[in-house]
Length: 142
Image 1 (cartoon, rainbow, N blue to C red):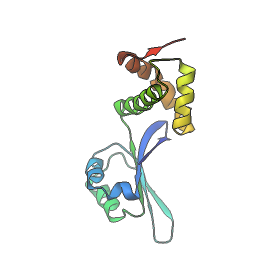
Image 2 (cartoon, helix red, strand yellow; image 1 turned 30 degrees about the horizontal axis):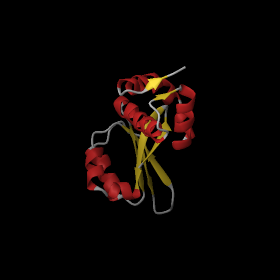
Image 3 (cartoon, rainbow, N blue to C red; image 1 turned 30 degrees about the vertical axis):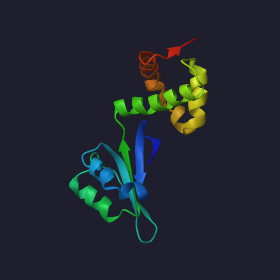
């Protein structure tokens, strides 16, 4: 599983080994789907653009586990939690309980895909992230 930006949203992408887990498969049904692809026997990629994973889509995914990639839109809370975990890890790693925006940005940019940290998604949630960090005892300094 990895995280990417797709259509100005953060998505979790599952493929191959991820989808061999029945726990992951059971969590897919009904989720907000960004889309999924299936590679056919000739190597062509077929993209399926759907809103939710219904029983039909789930069966298509299960039948094609070795050649399917599924992208699930992350909810607002999941996005904040994703950035929070990374920011908290970086602050602990640097033995800091305070930070300024630019140094946190640099630490996170070195940790995650640059496209994510440079995205509109980051700009939309960073203030909420800073508030959550402050509630947990970290300080933002100018």
